[in-house]
Image 1 (cartoon, each protein chain N blue to C red):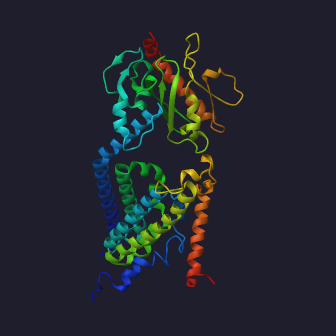
Image 2: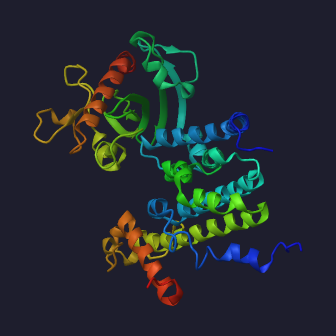
Image 3: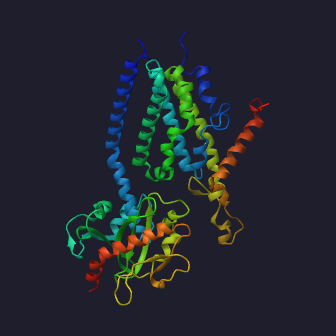
Length: 214
Length: 232
């Protein structure tokens, strides 16, 4: 029997990485970039989008090739596919969102080493058809991106008083302007990103006891 | 089909590499013009920043067109020569003998008169450093400066691209009272240097600072004839 495009199983592929099988909070993959690019919302969003594009298309390509890839060099093939996609994404960012590409600097190139990508290609795409692989890629990219955006939202709001570059905390609140408020400079630094990830993991596990280790 | 044989593996790997190389080469070529445009806009932003004009990515080109009255190239003897100042690659100019270098000059209109913006290029600790220095029309006093770097240590040498480091450059002198070229000295605390030529260095960034000092001395020396000509 042919499976529908959006069968229950396929929808599960898309949604489970966003929630109960999140690559960052459950599998603890891709932490490095989650700390590095989340001081502001805009670069975090672009990073999330880039990773989603790379992992989705990487999954599809590997899935299409899965019966032809020689087993002994499969990791190399996966790496070449990822590296090529990342370079293409990097070139596009440089051409169309140059300022963001400068902020992300080396971290776009480092998408290649993001464990989520190799993990999905090796664990999923090599054994599944292109369409489920595509959904799995989108799901994992979105799961990664969601966490990045949550972290970046709080870091930008509390660290700089802005969201997506728009001022949220009024200028007149600041001590420099005679107010009572001051930005928390710690939020800009990577350690607070780690602590924010920790808080998200805490919230998620206390709401879903199934995720708690015995 | 046996996908694990040696022959198959070799052919597969070769074909894949050639295909991927071709795709990447085509992408890079197609996107080159758009990327170059972005790099040019950034350069214009930096040129404007050296005279303290803030610009965003969107309005840099129009502000540049309005404020930069003209740009031209001079040679080592200070004579104007043919060519587009904006297109000069400082790295390749620096590889030439001093007398053959082409030296770009940008003239900027400000409320305080015409400023001459000179690009500078030199070596830091880990890689190249560069920047733009704006000189008043007395051809002696610095009006402003911006610096950038490729690979200096974050928190130490990399601080040369901060306002804290760059602001003290304005008002400093290139020549002393007798007309000798002293340039700018990036000094450690307690280092003895005339105050009108001295800026504070960065703790932990001494080698970058000294590289910057050497860069300014070399480039001001190249422009010396141009300065003298303009002074007359």
